[in-house]
Length: 265
Ligand SMILES: [Zn+2]
Image 1 (cartoon, rainbow, N blue to C red):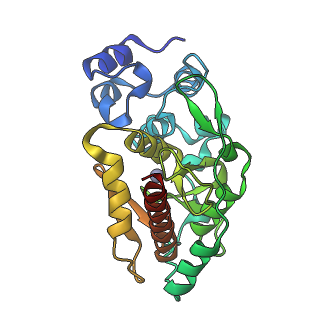
Image 2 (spheres, helix red, strand yellow):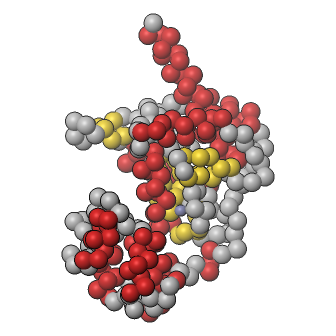
Image 3 (cartoon, protein in one colour):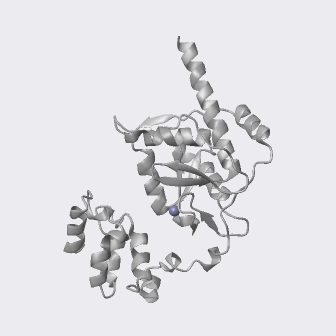
């Protein structure tokens, strides 16, 4: 790995754990000095690091350099990255709203669906991984389709509301430790927002997670615009139907928990 000295310095100045966490906006001082990115720079951003995954925000960084005219289109072509900047096929679509036509039907559907408890497998003593999540491809498809407008090849990120092709979309579980395998309990994000979401969801401080769950439950479903729900300092946008489904599931789970508590007495 040959990440230049100044990036490392910058990262430690910003108190990041490692250089790989820096964002394009952090680099302003470096960017003005850079004439053009070289192949070597591209390789660093894309493939450096222990697992060769490159910088966490590599796509944001490379797109930033392109927009500031420091990366040529030809260079993007060489690294198969033109999708970053020309998504003409994805233009002209708006974030789906998917109005709720029959709330009672959604409620009934959730109340009568079979409860699939997630089996957990021990990976290490401290890490329990829901095994179901590795095998259930249904959840990914469900989230992807909800956020793909008809006739479009792209899927909307529920955080930045940008459209991306499927291979640049990540599907995340809404819940930190889901008990049941609901395909509706997943969100559709671009790669960057997926990371942002995970760190907010997994953050046990400031009650970010419990506030997010409460915000989804208490939101008033609007049938005319994408429904925004706050998580930390970010917003997540839902279609009306998706938010209604999530609310009914959260309510059912809450009721089940209550029942269990009563039984335990
Ligand atoms: Zn996004």
